[in-house]
Amino acid sequence: MKKFTVHKGLVAPMDRENVDTDAIIPKQFLKSIRKTGFGPNLFDEWRYLDHGEPGQDPASRKPNPDFVLNQPRYQGASILLARKNFGCGSSREHAPWALDQFGFRTIIAPSFADIFFNNSFKNGLLPIQLPEATVAQLFDEVLAFPGYQLTIDLERQVIVRPQGEEIPFEVNAFRKYCLLNGFDDIGLTLRQSDKIKAFEAERLAQKPWLAQTMVG
Image 1 (cartoon, one colour):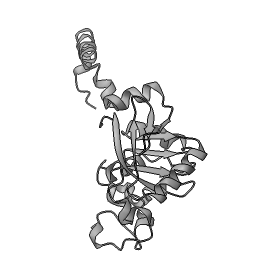
Image 2: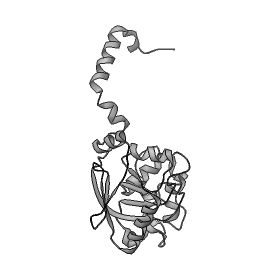
Image 3: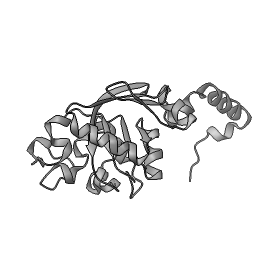
């Protein structure tokens, strides 16, 4: 998992409430058994005018010119600004995969669905919850100033506006530790690999029959 320390990026405004996970990555794309390749189908039903299926070449599709992520001023955005209850709906981990693989590193919103919120941390995304009034101000600034960028400093837990003003945010200490160090659940477990190997060796010495393959 990629580390998250300080990130500066272009902000794209998703001016919709209750964006659910089926909108983030539609159900037909969940057929894949891989964890990669979901970025081109992020917000698929909103980004394209035609229906998408797994394996289609995005270049052959008809993009929706009115959708925010298709607008030239937001190309290359890595910070998504959203409204309340972002990530509601089914508990598909493909949603943070798609956001990450599209290029987003953080999502800022007044509130998130719990499962999506937790899945984001486990996949290297930083979801930041701010008061609704603060988010509304950021929407106004993003719309007013093309090329609007924010700096996210996870260590200091602040968002830095273009003119230097700082917005503090809260983050769970354990989640912060994992993001700063790039540890997902597997990475956290592998830190104990020496102890795991020692335990397995001791158990095998005490119970050698566990190594035998059972037949029948």
